[in-house]
Image (cartoon, each protein chain N blue to C red):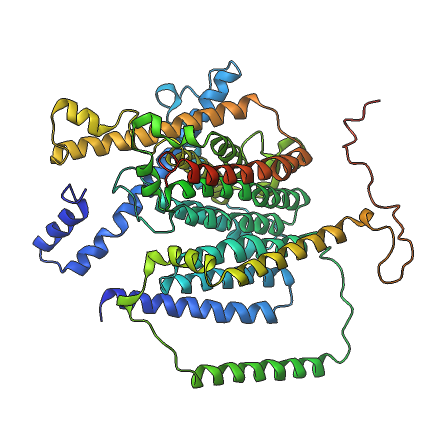
Length: 372
Length: 199
């Protein structure tokens, strides 16, 4: 989209018109997309928390939140405000430095990973060349934060929860990375933009889910395990470990864990939709619709329209996956720790290796379908 | 000076300070837990330095391998050790410290000498390959660096097999060094969890 709508350029020209130098205009522009994505992530968390409450209520034949706003939509905001003004308690025997640093180390990598989530052709913070690899690298920092908070709480349940969380995320990261590698092999690029564009040939038919069905299932299972959602929520299994590594946390520090886990869930859903479900693409390509209606694609109005459709499609696909994750949480039992590790090491790892080999073979045999 | 250069300078000084102070902390702190977590900070800052050098793939690989795998394993091992254990006082601590400091200083002076005597080829910013480096690394790994790459993977495989043999003592029923039969009473033989065996 060379000659399309360039918001950054327009914004910079506007500031230059006010008499600022181009460098200062650039500095003023820089935080805007980041703030926008941060706000989007937090609003996404509020929506997800509301959905979680309502869907869990429906699954258990209750009504759920009802009084705060219409259908209880203000309930997550009320929850957030409560956590914000709650007293911040650090246990007397806890290690206060590590206790404070733990939740930060859990949340920051998750938020940084939003750098590479595209909502449209140019609608992302930075199209870094290492793209999806950055997310894999950043998500490997998280277990350190979990171990840190588990250790610093000076509580047996917390330590066990932290150890479980680290073991779980180490074992599921490998099949996750291998299934991403199969996609990268087909795309010849690590960039998320290229991954989506590679799937945009023939609408819904060219989505990666048809070419990588095994990879899709492996990725989804591993993403659920990385987010510590049921059936893989062993690190915070209530019946065994009180609340796992977050047992001793209260107030805003607990809220950081809470935010982190929900932002991670939305991020995983977004990445599944980018890697396997065509990202911002419509099931029928926009180009075909535009041709059918005889509209040039470069007109500014059409660009705004396609961009908004792109955002809607990305968010819609992600929230369908979030819905499935919530439904799974409230309808499936938890696996045992040995079953969890067996599934990770003895089942998903060999299968994802075989999937990678199969993809490489198919890429050589059928280059026109598997990205030669 | 442009804003980009000032930002780069600030980032570089912060990162190098964190690397130096963190590394000193890793060595000098008494608590091994703090040392392990500081090591994580050092690895992350080194990744940041790679980013400043436009080597984003190496930076991400550094985070993935050193922070996500090596350091997590170190912390894991520390967490599983009983922290209330009192360590035995080491004999001749002072003379040991003096010797180790002397060895470290010798190594440092050697490194400084290499740094000063070598003529470094500094790539100009225009000739840096930037985002293309991922492709270049791949090309090199599969052409002229193929043998070292494969040898490294064989080495890792050997280490892994060795770890498995050590962990699963039931594979060997006699001690390698002494040749005596190994007591295996404490090794758990049941492969199935107890809850499954109902009858």
